[in-house]
Amino acid sequence: MVDSHANSRTRILDAAEAIVQARGVHALTLEAAARDAGISKGGLLYHFASKEVLLGTMLGRLAAVLEADFAAAVAAQPEGRGRAARAMLAWAFNEPVAACAQHDRAAAVFLAAFHHDPALLDPVRAVFAAMRAAIAVDGLPPGVGQAIMCATDGLFMVHVFGLYALNTTELADLRVALERLLETTP
Image (spheres, rainbow, N blue to C red):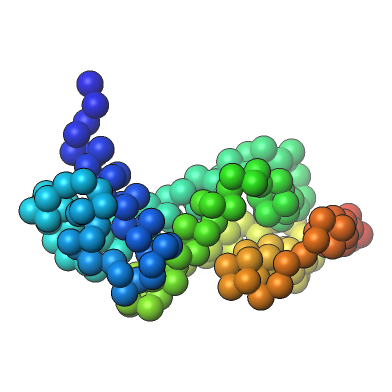
């Protein structure tokens, strides 16, 4: 049996993310989210009392996905020194093309929340703090794990803002350089 309560919440969140991605945060209204989710505004208000609650829930859901994805990336790496940093490299460079759409949606939600109320990003900040903590106890010399994290975060940001695009060769070269950084650390 399908949980219609959870299904409605998911449809609303998906619709809100799609609105933000396609038309920007200014287009995200409770009415638009309800319409695009195929429910009444009253049905939406049952789940989300305000735009702030809706945005906060979108960020909470995104933070949970980021946390789970990072945990899976770490678990996929062999134990030992640099495990979290290796996971970040794998996460950044091994993503299937379909993940780009997920990243674009995440970026739209980040920007919408930041535009509306930067405090809404706190759940995502907490996930990044946990990733930084994992890097800090990763057994690498100071700065190495942070360099990997900053480089992979930078890849995401240049994609989000369309600042520039690395071709296949440049991406491969960057990955090799970052892997060498891990290999050559004492």
